[in-house]
Image 1: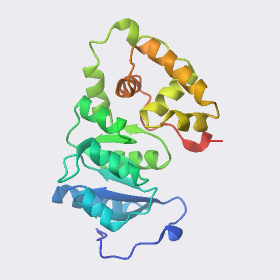
Image 2 (image 1 turned 180 degrees about the vertical axis):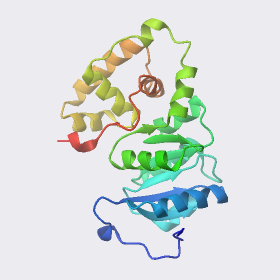
Image 3 (image 1 turned 135 degrees about the vertical axis):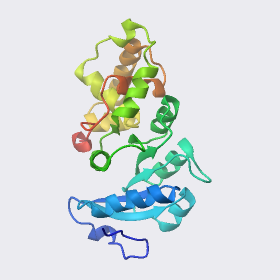
Image 4 (image 1 turned 90 degrees about the horizontal axis):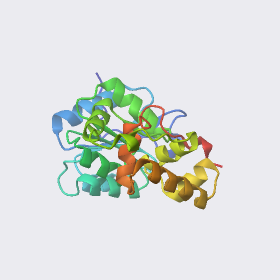
Length: 236
């Protein structure tokens, strides 16, 4: 099996083939990093970019903006939600792949801008599905991680858990969980920012969740994050 190494020449931004996704990896565990690199090198839709062990080294490689970045959280130097935020600010789509999958860790990463969260026991097929979903503008949380969130949420009052959301409220909640700002949600759905905030007020009233991380948890509990996540195709 071929493994693409950092010394090989990469295509430029303009040479990226149609339908292909540029993917980078930030993972400090050598064996896991090599395994993920091998999976990506063998995926025909992936253009493999930087494969490094820290956010600092990732900066050096100047990965073209818009890449999907598989990011571990337990990194040397910048780590956790701070690492997610820093990579997102470079213009990339972060897909966290981490052994740390406690609810507060997941919510912190998504609140910092991560588009998805996978536990490290995920198989290759699901990893590639998650990459495609995130590259397409969607959000993806593995079943194992979603199950942890739902278990953590088991003590919520039944009236809040059973509150029905309208289809539009579900769209807004899904986009909030994907890390979109109010202004971005407005652009994606083709509505005004004040209208978005009105929907958010109603969602908060129905769910009892006032803060963004709580809304993310609610979206996961309702099954609104996964393979069929939000797409940017609705942007007008």
